[in-house]
Image 1 (cartoon, protein in one colour):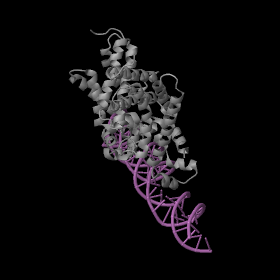
Image 2: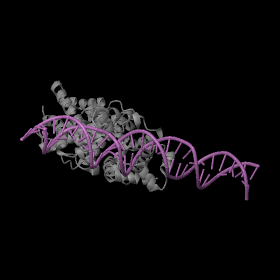
Image 3: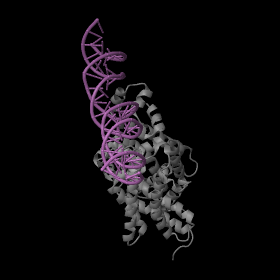
Image 4: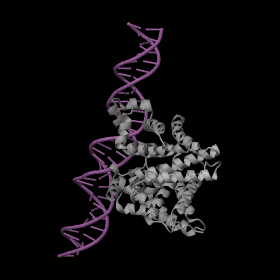
Length: 188
Length: 188
DNA sequence: ACATTAACTGAGCAATGCTCAATATTGTTT
DNA sequence: AAACAATATTGAGCATTGCTCAGTTAATGT
């Protein structure tokens, strides 16, 4: 069923077609709708696949990381997005009708992904309040995401930003340093 | 022609329909296509309208700002997005075919918007290299954008982020403080 | 009055999401 | 094996979409 993912990677979310997926996969449209319920359901399934690939990529990078593990994650964020631009964008640009929330099994995938980052950030801020650490983790993910999105959305690339990944690294580094000073114990 | 903007604000980019706009505005689809060339052209015109409203909002906020001007901009970013969610999202989620760049008149609007932020940031870092300041400005806008996007995209709101605007303020504050220390003169 | 340009129209085409009665396949019981 | 039930699959059909373009209408100039 990841023929659908391939098609999404080729044409992007805007020109994604259930009929085309059915044709490629060798089933009729009816069957596709019986299985996934709707276009939204199909896209959700594809995005879930992408999320799983992404978290697996994160874990692999962490396992192979030598020095700064957070830097490895940030680089991973940018590289995965650059290597899978259309499917990565689809994760963020697909919205369910009338702003409904995604089903829990899907939200769990997102939580898994964010959890990886949160754990690494908590590991660098040992003496801090876990709730505050979680909030900081979300904030740092948002920071990295903002840089990554701007690097892919051509419209905002106009001023020739060449190294958004390095900028994100710098911002996150500053935030963590600040949290270390304000928060609990500071390492010698 | 901002009947189109109203429709976009109601149904969102995914369910936006040129035919519906034509019906509302009292012209035939043919005329709409003669004027705007394509759906992309119509959406681009609507997004341009939104961009102009947004920059006007920024300038008004700066004119009325009492204390921290950068904080006023950041709050403005979040409030404008919250008050115009669908049209704000459309600015970022509308991509021209095959990744083509937007026409220059449109890019100029974006540059205007970013220029406002860049000027305020430059004003706080007087002794720094202008090119580096511009890069930092883009980075800070990306930071704010990331927080704002996460606050609107329900999918990533799952962990109950209540104050993304304050988180963005904190991140930007830390970055500016860091730039002040590293960069040239530091005020007493 | 006529001619020329500009503005506007809407039926028509291909493609889309989605439905649902009909058909085919598989599994189970006798 | 045969009869039955449950499940899987189909694809014509409907409404709607983006887009085109020959033709009509309005505006303008001479």
